[in-house]
Amino acid sequence: MIDAAAHIRIARPSRDLVAAERFYADGLGLDVQWRVTAPAPGEHQLLMVGPAGGGWHFELTRDPAADRPVEPAPTVDDLFVVYLGHPVDESLVERLVAHGGRRVPAHNPYWDEHGVTVADPDGYRLVLCSRTWG
Image (cartoon, rainbow, N blue to C red; front, side, top):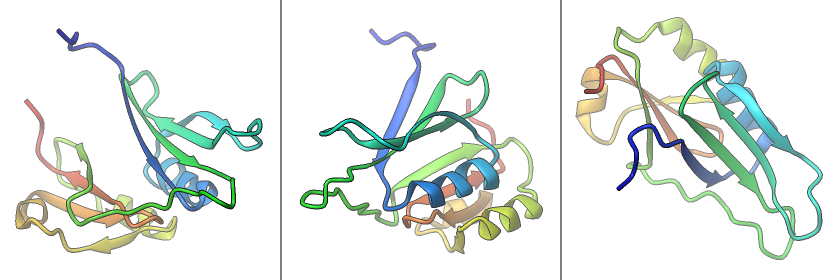
């Protein structure tokens, strides 16, 4: 059985970790928890961001090997949903756009009804949901 307090890591590839950091740290306001920019041979560059004291973090990776980089392949249903519990502040959306995001209509109209969807620099979708979870 998995403990409900278990730490969660969500990982996916990125084309540009500097752009990802601008979006998730400077735009969304997550803390940089770890960064590797000059990995040992065979290892990945990575960026870990998450809320201070949170039980989860988001890891973005980039394989610098020119012969096998993993390219992001987002779909309209690859969502990273943040439940805010209050209406989405338009200034947050504007900050995300100013830091490399792009406001997009949601594939599922539920998310447009209850929040705002912003594509990150790699095209993955962040949903800021006005509802709460639980």
